[in-house]
Length: 247
Image 1 (spheres, rainbow, N blue to C red):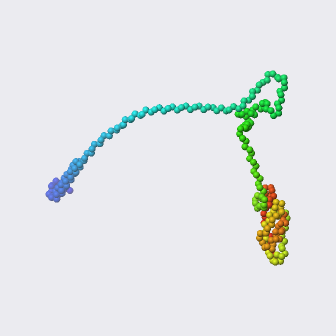
Image 2: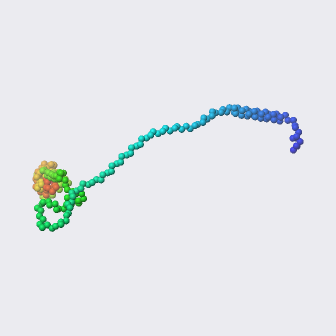
């Protein structure tokens, strides 16, 4: 490397132009920056000074003089309840002298006053309190009237004991109806009386040629009567009689 070439100033017109251009740009930049700083500093406007805030406390108004509250009146003391005294007990005196005469016998039923004094004393006696004679005594309630017995036949319900058969034969097949080939079922409604006999017998269904024989047979039946509340009653019953010709 040749050190002498650094100390020798060679003519370089291009280098001089570059340096001049650099100086010019630098000067313009410095001038612009200075102008910006000047304009910015002059444009700042100081704001108004803040007013000093002063705390103001209002003077308290004097409280109105309050009237003293009246003192409450003392409550009256409850008076002890005094129980009404009962009759006073007779005092027992010790005899000093022995009487010569014997005491007279009291008449039967007379009150001599020598009975038990505690029986009449009130307030603490163990016996029942004496009745107030001024209060009327209510009469006892009358007994309920007896139930009326039914006059006619009734239906057999759960409260009625049904009649029990004693004699109950079956009706015979009428010869005329059998010869004519009449068949069917006869239904008879009958009433068993309080004496156990059949008072009413009426055929309500079946061939007419067979009804009379069934009604006559039912009227001959006998029963132990039905019972209601321990009494014999008359009740309604129904019987069915089928008639079939055997071949």
